[in-house]
Length: 247
Image (cartoon, rainbow, N blue to C red; front, side, top):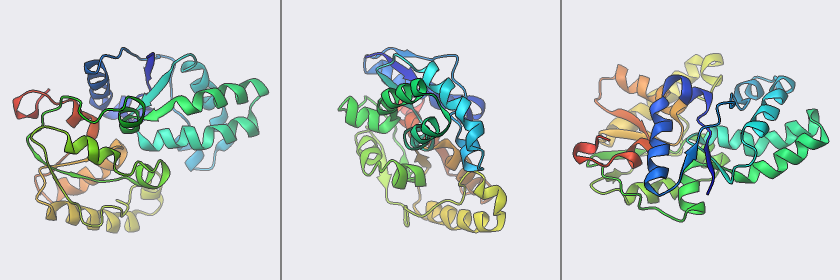
């Protein structure tokens, strides 16, 4: 299968290890992964702040960059949701007939990482070893947008040595929400405090999720509380193989 990595601008800029982990897992499973260098932002920041027309050129760039691939895989539930849920509407409103066709053909091939593993490749066991106590936070986009349901949990339960613990009120928002945290800092901070308290109550060593943006937000709250919990994208756990959980 010809697979392309859609790293997302957030991961590429701040947490490139997440993208490397996705590649490691897919290569371990026997797939060759390309990185189209022409890829840029999918337009989520523009759409979320009301600049839909300005996002249209990014839709065109995305369609061109990933044309011809059998699958486009991303470690971001929020960006996968934006591409699948909003790109067709943007192409319809601002694009040409050719762009509408391109987007319609490409969108079904765009997959969030965990759904690609479970639904497309049909695997949950990826040869990972991570002997740590782990809690999973289902981000709003993964839970309510893509409806990943138990896919991440199934992958985590198959990791050798991993102790998966329940997170109280797991379905509650962490308070990030992109520009929400900037526009509503007091509300965001209160939501973050609740989430951090629930994470610390699990006794977990690691909190993971399918969106690094939320993990960065929660991680900041956990660091300020000095609770000793680190955050990792789920892909980084699945990429771990050596004793001690180090790749």
